[in-house]
Image (cartoon, rainbow, N blue to C red; front, top):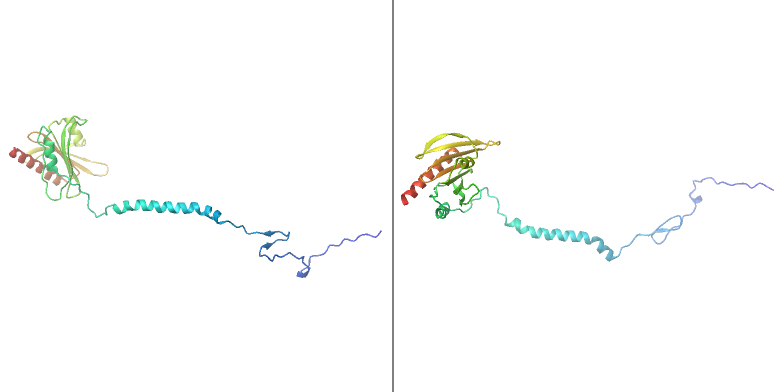
Length: 230
């Protein structure tokens, strides 16, 4: 028996010697194993379901913008001016006089002082009924007055913010005990405590010394005016 020879062809650089690869005439990519790669297709309904979440989010954002837009449009534009509420101190003092056992004072402070509150405080937790009013000063600081005929040492300590007494001074015809304190930020609070004919008055705030003195003088003048009218 003749031996069977084994033939192992060597790779050839000749393109004609390469095996034929089936080609597709339909436009799909042909593969050597005879399968073709098919491009996936989606229906219109499937596309609608895919884009529905994004469409809903856009609609929600548009609705939210429309709802919040009026609030932004209604906001007052900043004009550099501090808000000044319409407070009639004299009128509020006349109301307080109906229930107070003393004459609430309504000092006339003049231009540059803007009242921001005026009220009667009765049946308070400290059992001290009082008349209160406050103003923004020309230097954009605060000054207020508290008046009562029920003052006691503990209450006075609270009204001056536990500040130490710095002295006593005569101003506008009466003697005032003066107090001053400074917080950690360097803000100074001044308080003057004086005795009127029928009550104790505390003038206090972050206003300057001159502004505190101005209010104290107006308080004395108002008390004198009320006394002559009555």
